[in-house]
Amino acid sequence: MADQANRPKRRRRMHGIATWGPGLLLISPSIVLVGIFVYGLIGQNFQLALSDKHTAIQPETFIGLDNFKDLLTEDRFQHALTNLLIYTVAFLIGTMFFGMLWAILLERGIRGEGIFRSIYLFPMAISFVSAGVVWRWLLNGAQGEEAAGLNRLFQSLGPGGLQNSWWDTPNWGMVAIAMPAMWQLSGYMMALFLAGFRSIPDELREAARMDGASEFQLYRHVLFPQLSPVALSALIIAGHMSLKVFDIIYVIARNTYQVEVPATYMWQVQTFDQAKAATIASVLLIVVAVLIVPYLVYNHRTEKNR
Image: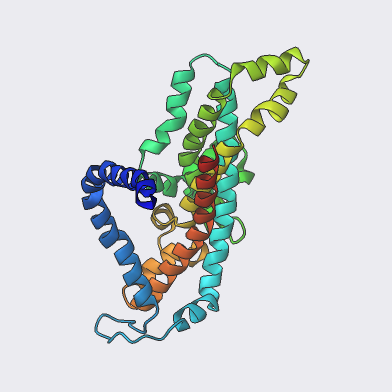
């Protein structure tokens, strides 16, 4: 009797295996490649970070967390982390603000929406390296007769007092460095928010207007709360992109200590100190994982409960 009762369960299990079998076979090459070139290399990086292999010819000896302790107490790395924090805050505020602003303007149905949408999204088609070359000229810190870029524009239009050293300024250098990234990613944020606005049923808007809600009240109490999942996704995407920033800072400022971040610091030391570079990479991975993993868990639970 027990065997007969368990027979349907075995059939369902075998059916599930038969269903997943062909699909698993098709994606198995991708699984193997990801396992080797992503997780395998991550594991090798952590192994190197836990060793004293500072040069290519030096033997690899396990030393535990000594490299992490030395790095986290180093003044230069703390300076790079502070710069990264300032950059991340400025980048998130700028991209979220302009992305939301442009999405609201387009969501209200202005004329030439397709043209404006293309203009806002165009910077995304440009690589960070190409954008960095242009912005390096725009953020030229020379003033007076030698002024170029934005300083030259301010000098020609009259408000010469707006001229400054841009990314070479001690307090606001990282905010200036964040401007090119804001310009490039705000269009992407706009696309996310616009998709969120367009997914809200028109019945909610009509019901709010019939209840006498003003446009400000409509956005505050009806539309913005509906955008919470989109805003969270946009925040996570922009946050993890800002934490691992390298190319645009390197192109604009090269190896300038004033605007150094962990990724550029890692690039400088990787030629003569492999263990230290691996430790910096490991710290960056941990920081990004702290941001991403809770979001993935929350998203999985949300999807599972639907």
